[in-house]
Amino acid sequence: MPFKPIPAAIAVIITLVIWFFVPVPTGVTPDAWHLLALFVGTIAAIIGKALPIGAIAIIAMTAVALTGVTADTPKQAMKDALSSLSSSLIWLIGIAIMISRGLIKTGLGSRIAYWFISIFGKRTLGIGYSLALAELLIAPITPSNTARGGAIIHPIMRSIADSFDSKVEDGTQNRIGKYLALVNYHSNPITSAMFITATAPNPLVVDLIADVTGAKISLSWTTWAVAMFLPGLACILLMPIVIYALAKPELKETPHARKFAKENLAKLGKLTTQEKIMLAVFGGMLLLWADVPAMIFGSAWSFDATAVAFLGLSALILTGVLTWEDVLKEKSAWDTIVWFAALIMMATFLSKLGLISWFSGEIQSLVAGAGVSAVGAMAILTLVYLYAHYFFASTTAHITAMFAAFYTVGIALGAPPMLFALILAAASSLMMTLTHYATGTAPVIFGSGYVGLGEWWRTGFVMSVVNIVVWVGVGLVWWKILGYY
Image (cartoon, rainbow, N blue to C red; front, side):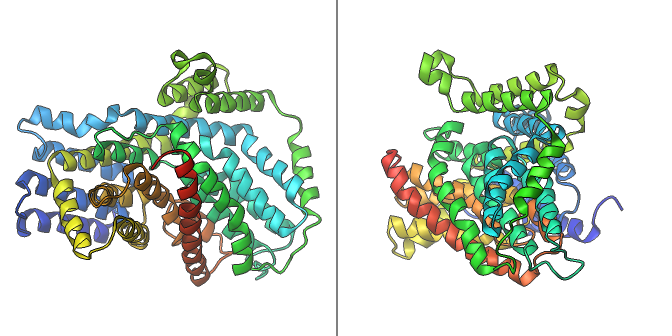
């Protein structure tokens, strides 16, 4: 069958039950409630993986158009269903994913990782830091965290483990492989939280924050990067040490790792012309995203982040680093554009139809009834939001379902809007640490067999605590200095 029968049936049943059998609450319009039924059914289908997420998105947009829950006329309903396809944030991520293919195609991503290992690879801990720093370096331009952690860094990590005879098949993964696999994975949530373009759902967070605040808070690429860099750097520096204590490798010294990396760098040879072009485009995009020209020459030299992404892709096509065939084959980019458009569209109209306001009011009443302060409310909302990810297999589904409501409630209970936005934005990536199904990178690395299920979950929980405590602790000081609250 083209779909999974049980997850598909569950999604359909949930939709029908909410639509026909659950009474519409007081204060909610029937259209808003019916759109909620479609929305919850869509989320259930995504979580159950009834179909590929892009296919689910197409069906969801079709349902919105045919049922007319957003408009009075079929023509307007169709326009509403397709409305988010014009979102510049969606295209920013889609284009950046296309550009990230250049890192893999040219070999520049592997070269960067091997270069770090050749410097820091004398000890096992040093190799861990090499993997983490390599991921950090390429994070701003690899919005597919799965591609970054699973397709670029993970093969290198496995090659290193194999070079030290640490193999799952031989039962020798504890020598060094298990430790490196955990570092490989836990670098991913941290780097994802540091840049808008480091994971696909981050622009959705930006969009939801702008919607809730009436565009009073609109996080730019630069604002996000500056705000998250110091807390993220603190977490990335601490993480290899924490995992070293949790999953201590049998092999502590790795004198041959640097030789291994240098040999692979030698095989790669000198920087090729295509790598140089990729590096130049990469550096140029970072400069433009960071608004450096505007700082030097004035606001006339400030560029839209999505326009910069289009410029980078155009440069790679014109120079032959990427071909149009490469772009067409980047299925994850086109897939992301489609399913992001569907989820953002549904979330936007849930807000326009008043359902998010109603739901937020209900949560606000519950939290307010507990008599906690604004600080207590932020803490409760953040922890519930973070650990609810045990019930999600998609960060996008989680963010779409919960972010706007929790953020709205926090602001209503007195949380500083910018401060709470940054905390929830960070939590939206840090929640990836928890399970072996938390994000696309998880099954790739977990599936390699270096880490058992129990240890994966234990390490994930510990790292979630460490990350959120360090991120908020460092962030409170850093964001105060930046004047964000």
